[in-house]
Image (cartoon, rainbow, N blue to C red; front, side):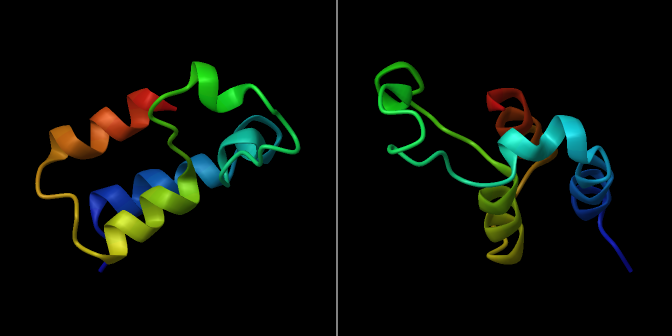
Length: 69
């Protein structure tokens, strides 16, 4: 059975045209100044990793990561 967090992540992935920039970590070669402005980067693949490692102990921690994106 899929958790609510998994469902949300899978639903986000369906919006390929809009979610594409948030799927993976931004590479410095693609955006050299990115990490000067974004101090807490968040992206879907990291959220999947956190989900698989049981790092989301509360709904709030998941929503906080969504808001970072």
